[in-house]
Image 1: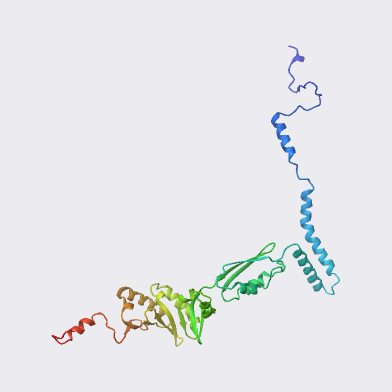
Image 2: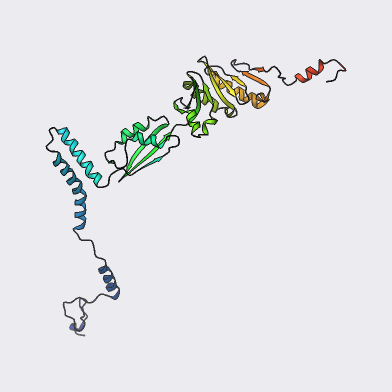
Length: 320
């Protein structure tokens, strides 16, 4: 066979009516894909740079306008203040004003008290609001233990409060004040009762000039005797040294001073668990001595075993 008749691997056949330099038509699937792509126009190349330039240019322009309106001020401080004021006015016109205040964790603190502490009203510039100062003012409120504030632009302040827990009612100078575990005054108990707060009815009372400073140690000791704590209705701080507890059945428990108090309460819990001492007809239990407990009975009290002794002393033949 002649070499001229051998197949050429670079040979590209042409269709009838098609020029030698023209590309062959793509397959049917490629043509369909091309038609589908042509229906979605790509973003012009100039769009992204223009968008970035607008993000940078608009605030810069606002700042320049504010500075130009204040350049004639007599001092640098006044110039900067005027520029800042102009910038805030410009941002306010763009919608960065207070529209809503969301408060989470508020149970006892009045909403009006929170708003007064913030010192801001609807329509004020939210960017001019000082978060640090507002946080400090909120944490000065009696019920508030800690606070956090954040802006949620364009117009919302989000506030989270952690409130103190009421633990007792301090009776002093004919007043009743709700205090927390650390003895800090929270609110007037009478006012809370007038508002319908039912929680304060379950709080024990503490009596004494310096009782709030000592209540934390007492509560910590009572936490370790859960069978006794719910029965305590009041605690009297005696001679600025020790506590007398009043129980729900009218029994007075005289506790020792200092570090002996927790041990005495554990002793009371053990005595009641084994001998049901709090169910007897007694008026007081003296636990001030570390090695003994003294029970004071009422005038008509009869301790276990006394009935048998009384029966032995009766004259024979006499019926009762």
